[in-house]
Length: 399
Image (cartoon, rainbow, N blue to C red; front, side, top):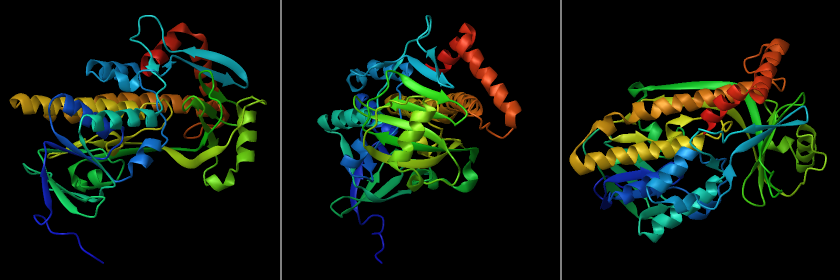
């Protein structure tokens, strides 16, 4: 077993921000910092091909669309369809839930996350940015000091260390960045819904609009993932694995829950079973280390807010670093965590509200409660689908 080279014996690099993780939050932070003339180095442990093809849920909300446009990067989200309505099938009966109501800011776009990632990578590399893939053994040092160090092994096997002013931890839940914060330096607030989903990616025609279905057989959903692909969700029993759901069973259950006997099928390219969970790390920073995206908070895909929180974190962080670098203003850095957490808790509440309603109305009330709770959730859903005031409330939360 070989040990890592000691600090100081590695090839030395220097930059303003070392970004650990090349997903949405890390790439967005890099491109916004670059627009401010601030240097950064992005370290991603996976290969570029993996990152660009990795399938993740995502609808880019209007606020994030506007952000990219205001920063001069509107091209990365241009050309994708508007996401302005959802169909909810209640026991097979289609109901339309509008999201682009008069007086609200606007609508989001159905940008699959891998398409956004590809656009960001292409823009960064075209501009000569330092984005290093297959960076192994990434470790953080002295993040509570004035000049942190980030060590890693490059794809060619050479050991490197980056001296920087700030570290942006964008590498996901419980990975290097979050694990570098001492246990007594904050709190992690977690919530387990007791709900398990099977997610299915398939080469099947996408629906005309986002689709969710509630009924006695359980919750199901279908969303577009590009012009010729769909992502499906099925609420499954705890303990189920992907092996319990071969394609024939998947398509039969989807057709039944979506009340679509002629549902177009296609090759299933990926499946995964995962629990619906929420977590928030508070505060979202420690010393010169700032957590962005999933490194700071996990939110269920219900409501499509995870990617948007990552984009918001990236903008808040980049703006704070810009202000400090330009004139020594530390206001944004000191307020980073509080600013991001305010939105994070609002989005968590929205996803919690939606998950409770959709699963409860399908006979699986979150936290139990039996028939009483199920009927309450049915009443909540009916109010949402029949009241202009309730629909407007939902649309405001979504957009």
